[in-house]
Figure (spheres, rainbow, N blue to C red):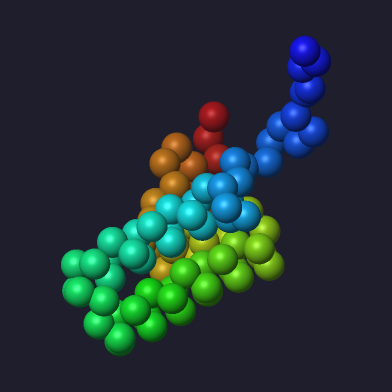
Length: 90
């Protein structure tokens, strides 16, 4: 029996052709549709949300969604200086 070292060690785990975070978004959209009993509007909105999340994740660099959330005020980076800081005291 031969052991093979994975080729890309930093790559995310893939499941059914999707990365782990994309697969989790698909599962969450199914759960939300189940809560609303698969109404057409909820189903269409969830499919659009998942498709846009996958498109953004594949066409923009890593961390793009977090940075957009930071600039819009929904996310805070911990242990980092403010964005507009220009003097640092160590």
